[in-house]
Length: 182
Length: 350
Image (cartoon, rainbow over all chains, first blue to last red; front, side, top):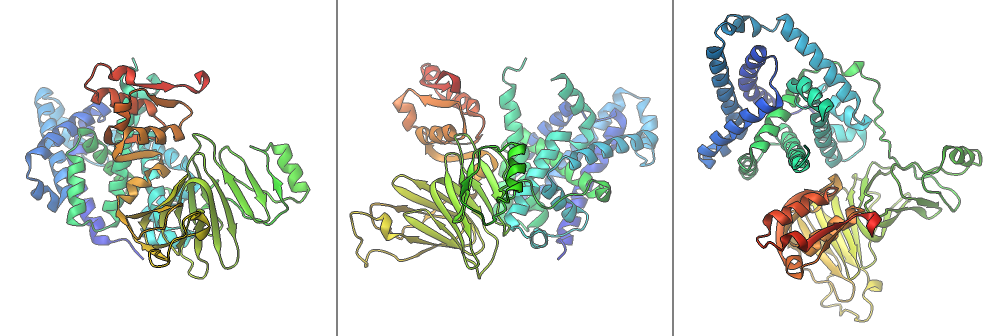
C-alpha cells in the first residue's frame, strides 16, 4: 500500500511555497541562524493570530507556509536594501548549481547521514520504508511485525531525535557551534 | 549563564515532540476539521510551536530528499530491548549480569534474557518476571511484536503459550500495544480485573483499592475477578460480567465493591503520555501530580502546604524534570509563601 499521494503532493507544494524564499534567504545570508529562525517564527505567529480561526482551519499548513514565505520574502527584500551589492549575486545564488549552495548541501547531507545513522535500528528502518519506499504506517507495521502505534511512536521519536541532533537541517552549522560553546 | 535556560530548552523539546506528532498526523492521515482546529490552536499558542513546526517541516523535506539510505550501515529491525521468551529452569538472573557471568550461563545451557536498562528479572518456567525500580521506566518488545511500557515501581509476569498471551500485572502501571492475533488472545490479569484484547493499545494501572483501565485504540473486554471482591459478594443482578471499552474510554474497577458499568470518556493519549516520558494532567490535584513525578524520579517533591496539594492544575511536563513543575507552581502561586510551599528533596539528603 502506498501513501496517500495527493496528501503528500499537496504538503510538498505548500512547503515549496516557503522553501523557495527560504533558499534565497539562505543564499544571501549563508544560513538561517537559530535566532533568525525564531524571529521569523515570532512574526509568523503574530500574523497567524490576525486571521479568523475558521479561515485557518480550512488549510492550516497552507496558511502556515504561505505566511512564513511572505515573512521571509520581506526579510530578504529588506536585506537587499541594506546591502545593495548583495542583490547582484542573489539571482545567481538561487541557482541550485551554485558551488556555495552545493557545499551547503553536501555539508547538510553528511550531517543528516550521521544523524540518521545514530538512530536506533528499528526507527531507521521505519524512516527508510516511509521515505524511500513510500509505505504507509499500516504496511510498515505489517512488514516489521509490530503495531501501527509503535510505527507512529517510533517516527515521532525519530523526528524529535533528529531535530535535537541536527537542529534544523539548514541551521546545522549554527547549532553545532552553539552546542560546542554551551 | 544557564539561569532560566533549562525551562526554555525543555519547552522547546516538548514543542519539538508535539510538532513531530503533528507532522506524522499530517503526512499520514486525513485530518478532520476538529483536528485541524486543534492544530491551529496549537500553532497559535506559542511562537515556539510555530518555530518547531517550521523546523520539523524542513526536516521532513530533507528526509524526502535524502537518497542515501542504502549507504547507511545495515539497520537491524530487531530492537535492542527484545525479550526472548525461552523456556528454562527457574533461576533468578542477577541485576546487570556481567559479561563473564553471561558467558558462563550460556556455557551452562541456561536461558538468557536480554533486556535493556536496569532492574532485574527472573526467568521461570511459568514466565518472565519484570520489576522496575523507582524512577525506572522500561519498554519491552515481546516475541509477537507487542510492546509493553512499564512504569516505575511495577511488577509483571509475562507468559506466552500456544493459545494465550498472558500478562500478570502484580503491581503498578503498564501500557500495552498489542499485535493482532485472533487465535491467541492477549490477557492482562490485574488481580481485581482482567482485560482481554485482540489487537489494541491500552493502559492498566493497579492501585491498592482498584484497577484503572484506559483504552487508547481498539477495544478491550474488562472482567471483574471474584477473588478480588472479598467481603461483599456482589449480587449477579448488579454485576456486569464484562464491560467492553472502546477508544478514549476508561473504567475503574474497585476491589471491594461490585464493578459498575460506568465508563468515563477520557483523553486516552494524554493518559498514556508517560510511555514517552511526558506527564499530562488535566484538572488534576497537585497531590496527584506530585505522586506521579515522585514515581518517575529519585529526587522527591514534597508539598508543605495542604491548600496547595488540593489545588487543581493542568499542564504537560517532562517526567524527568521535576524542577520545571516546581517552577510552574512558583510561577502560578500568587502568595509570597508559594516559594516555601513546595520543595525538592534530592535522594542523598533523604
